Image 1 (tube, rainbow, N blue to C red):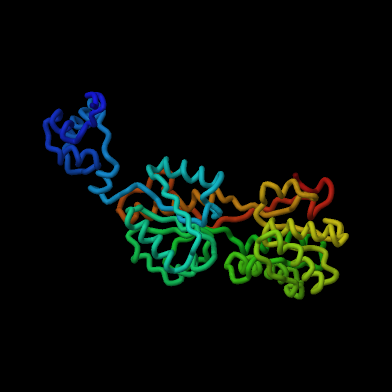
Image 2: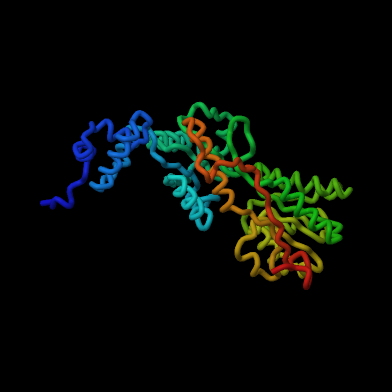
Amino acid sequence: MNSAADKRVTLADVAKLAGVSKQTVSRVVNGSEHVTEDTRTRVLQCIDTLGFRPSALARQLSTGRSQTIGVVSNGGQGYLVSGVAYLGMVRQADKMGYALLIKEMTDFSSGSIRTMLDYLIERQVDGVIWAGPEIGDSHAWLDTFDAASLPMPLVAINAKPRPGVDTVSFDNFEAGRVATRHLLSLGRKNIGHIAGPTNRWVSQQRVEGWKAALAEAGTSEMARNVVEGDWDVHTGGPGLRRLLEICPKLDAVFVGSDRMAIGVLAEAHKLGLRVPEDLAVMGVDNLPESAYLIPPLTSMTQDTPRMAEVALRLLVRRICERRGEPYPEACAIPENPLLTHDLVVRQSTLCGKLASK
């Protein structure tokens, strides 16, 4: 048998003490403007006296707002749902009064995507961050996406810009250009590129940035020195061998990911190529282990925690716009949704004191 102390305080209890109706208490709890200030003050004092805690479910039913944001990723391997990025997003959401509902997908077919969206709609999430990778239909469905077809706003992560779709991504074109300029600045004359899958927007943008830097330097003939990988370590070695067949005098290689660059370093060692004396090597991602490779790998840092928070703040802005409400302070100022990489120079491209740790 429950004691009196265990009895849950209800709207009726507050209404009785305040001398008002349950509907009036509900209006105060939900922030309605249709209550006088004297009544609001009296009800709030009674809430404090009784220790009343509003039911989140009841509030959701009465307001249609769950204060929840759905985050869709791929089995914990996406951009936002692990490590520092996820923790930062949780803290930022909490400051703005939101909770996160993390949903993982392994199948990004159109049917599975529709099922996931229906799931989020049924749970009345206030907005969606789509952090699925560019595989299957994970991004392709955005080509025909109609924002008005969803009852909540959506922000896509690292997806190519599309009309009517909010996206937050890294400037991969600029990353390719900066990486190539770095290798050119070292006096390298025969530069190659191992790209990620060439049907991916991220890979395509880096290739275009690479070509743009070559054109700026008057060395467009090097644009033929490109081969395809798949982001993973096992394609780095074969990629280097193919580049050497195309360009036997290859003296530098811009690799589309640090994981592939690890394979390049291993293959260079097997072939007796000294890095960086014979072959300068650099990647993208700046993985934690990249600083501890032999030699330490020059790379491009992607500030994923910042991307997570920018996406979250943009989504909350869109939620507020739909509701006609003011923005929380954290997202009051619009931010650039196109984020830049930072070049981190290490010994794999520079020797001695010129390279950073």
